[in-house]
Length: 268
Image (cartoon, rainbow, N blue to C red; front, side, top):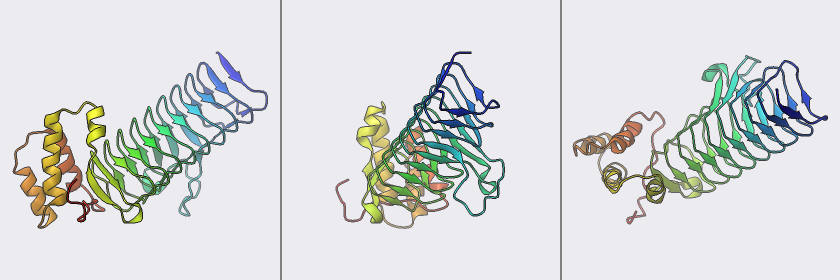
């Protein structure tokens, strides 16, 4: 087995290490950790708990993965962290294990970038191709779908959902679900400001897809009357577009309620 482990690293003999793993100075890898092929711990990295990590992940100095959650209801249950492939965890990133109240699992997909000082609390569920910018914070039980970008120093309240391919601005406080394909900003008193049109084009969405999403957005988030009536009106358009339907389904399934468009912005 090909591995490169620095002499100052402390690696439990019970830990499971894949091929071509590199563990730098002053790292610790505890007994219940599984580390996949090609992973690199640059230095001063802590991997602990029931933590399973896929292939080709990079951990920069002082990142901490799998530690006990900051939850007073946690009493040592054997909860887990599961991480996919090709993720980057920059300096001082923290990922905490799950709890009995949230399925005993914190999970991160693949191809994600977690920038410096980001925090993923207990029982969070992250998809793929996500960017958490510097000092972004996810409270417990948060869900972040594929392709989302969470701005620097933003905080997401527990049990909120961040939809697919959203762009969340810096220093935002997220208290409600953020619908897929949208963009939002505004700090503490944040609101939607339109579709993430530039991001959708970059991801290959067609003009027809974007037109359908704009029509649904206009009715649901900028219309008048009750939300239920607006949803029904949007359904009645018969757009037959998978992304428009995904947006409507997200709103209908929200328990916390969804962000709405700023009434002051008439041009988005």
